[in-house]
View 1 (cartoon, helix red, strand yellow):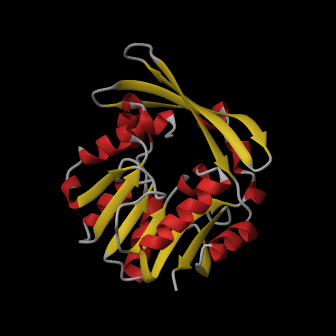
View 2 (cartoon, rainbow, N blue to C red; view 1 turned 90 degrees about the vertical axis):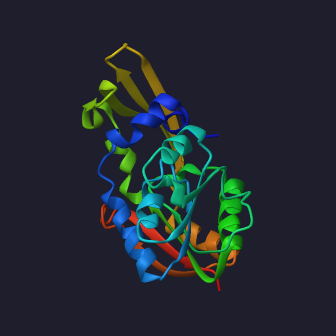
Length: 241
């Protein structure tokens, strides 16, 4: 089930304006070029920002996401007809063959249940061509990123054309072992509506991730630093033999 910030139509519609800087995705575009990928599966594609960036470069892209509202936003964007959009997840994909599968931003960490994570890794493995790669990022638990997720640090007021002013902020609700639950709050000035979205992320240790990838048949080629968060995230590059 998708979090409200992705699944609620009113929140999905403002997701991009609230997070307009997606320079974090440039690294994935460069890796698609580095690996010579011609067909890409974007797992957890959300509103389709990366999928459309890749499609603009002539790459065949399939975007999959469980949030219908986010897929609807993606389908409404210019050039969206060049991408195949699927409302679902990587555990039950139609027949595909791709050179590269990606999970950007919080996608990998948002798959919190161990069995669902294993099935996601297996689902990606099965659609990769031999030699194809799975690339995803995940925060280093040692950096304790959640300690910075509070109203004081995150509160902002955004003027969105056609919507009006939106106040938003995030607060941590619970930290339980590797699971961190937090709540985004959105206040629409136009009509006073207040919407909230709760999310839980699993902070996995590097060694555990490598073991899980190996168990699903991958070869771990590299663990890179995230250009937009140096020293704070791991970027895993794994290959299907």
